[in-house]
Image (tube, rainbow, N blue to C red; front, side, top):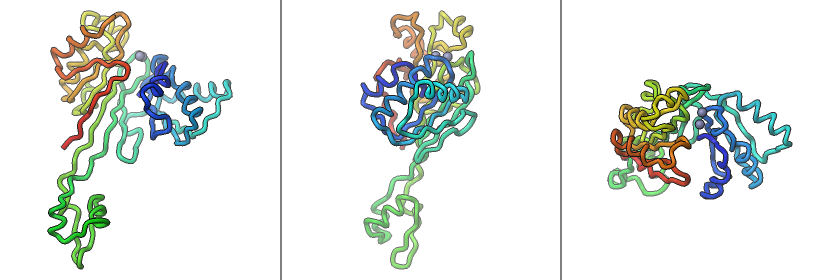
Length: 270
Ligand SMILES: [Zn+2]
Ligand SMILES: [Zn+2]
């Protein structure tokens, strides 16, 4: 989600792997959100990436990308699919999807929600045995939602699977003012990563530059009923983020401040 300067360095430093299934989501075309893209693509190519890569972004990015690659004679070892961002589902993976909604910033800007698809319910092994289903192939068929026949009797997945388990979701605001639309869009996500450029005392600047304060991020997180909040995109005017964090925690206690290499667990839902 966004690709600022230094993205490739961080990828390597934190061992994220350059040939994994991957999707690049760009919220808007300000340098601090795209300057690292070319470097990341080149680094992937130098490490012989073969898997195709999808980039979801405002469409103006694509002309720039093509021209720059031509000018610098950059060839890639993998295919790149360019998807213009729009409201709604912008990408479907095997077990996840990504939705986008319009943000409110000084240029055309978007927010994203990364959603795991619901997972099948817990498999009741005792129930399967009591129905005479032998362990092995037939168990895995049932686990994948397919019915099986045992001794002439059909056993349906609903007989041995618990209720479907909801997937987890992560929201990312990009640069934006807080809006009602985003409050709805992020409703109930497990983790929300939100613009926290300014402290409440600089609220007029936040309005002027079309960013949010940490207090506004916290209020939106509370209204949207999210589980955890990560503040990010801090203005260089603050030497430390403690003040921003304190401000947010008064309203939304489950807040952390982003930093390079921060790892946040998003526990599976039961
Ligand atoms: Zn911006
Ligand atoms: Zn920015």
